Length: 121
Image (cartoon, rainbow, N blue to C red; front, side):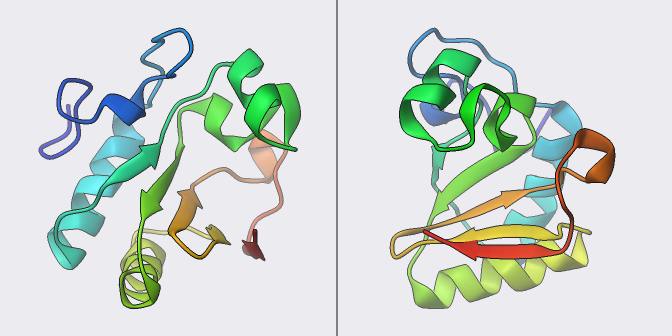
């Protein structure tokens, strides 16, 4: 599994409405490499079941978080930039930028999501 991210210490990795632990191990390994470069990171949202995602996101029942390959990470402006740069080195091409966090995922057109995207909240 991951060197830095696990369900015991990172409660937000699992769905907070039903407890499903749906994160993909390969995605957590990507997060390890990002953390190696930027230092400690706090995940604020990881896996979400379809019902939870419909309740909190406009992406509906099959949004990025429902695939287990997306996270939101608490970050200020400097940290967002460092995460974005490190994530791009790992092949991440999808980013959501908010005032207090950055969303990253490695979904692609094969998953039904457009690649090479940066959006704001």
